[in-house]
Length: 75
Length: 226
Image (cartoon, rainbow over all chains, first blue to last red; front, top):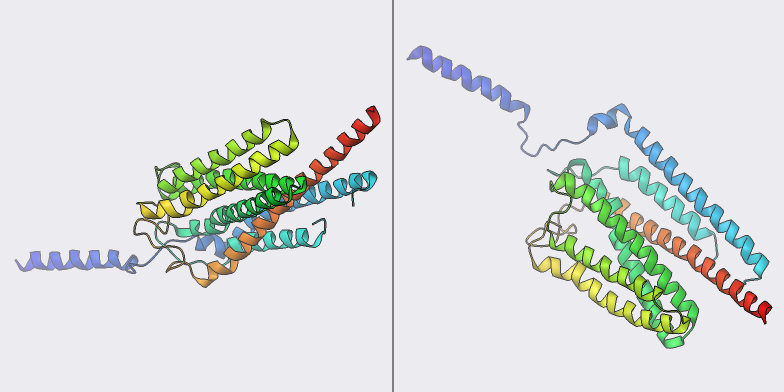
């Protein structure tokens, strides 16, 4: 009996140990590792470059239209 | 509207949203995890769409009161950029839903009413393209546009809240405004809406200018032929 109770106690302690890892019930996994590495900046850079390309393209269309408007004398 | 400053402002705001959208602090929420950042890119799209449609409706009313064809140009092109945002909103929404709700198109009332409203506005484009006479086209589509907006607001913002929906703000779900929408999100979310609205205005403006150029070209051709 004594042995078994020790064994049970041991199991409980063991499981207590396991619970300790996720003890915080409000724990929500986020991509914090990626942020620590600074790798997220690679993503930001890529998206920013894509958007910069789109923006430059739109500005160019804008200027081209302005040229045509000048030729046609639109206010 | 041919000034450059608000276009530069649009670019700066969207760059700010891209950088802060990825790097800014966000609340830690279960299930959503990092995808809460989609608020800046997906939810803002819909609000920008609504604003553009409201502006388009105002210009339709203006056209009916003044009869100037320029007002109709503005209304139709604003509607087109709003539809563009709506299609992007549906696509980004299904991508997000696939990960958060486990289905690219769960039969959520908000999703279905978004699809219906998109169809209503696609019918607007169909209506526009089915008239030859410009004034007639403008008048009928302006009236349709007012009706479409009057349907759009209830089916997107009111009806889903009366039933069970996965979206925040309906069926007992809390709205974004109440508890999980903290000030860190606001700092990026509101600029994102403004940036998208400016972007939509820019797209519309380019198309309006092309329309005006085409009209003048046609008039010149008619004068030449006579």
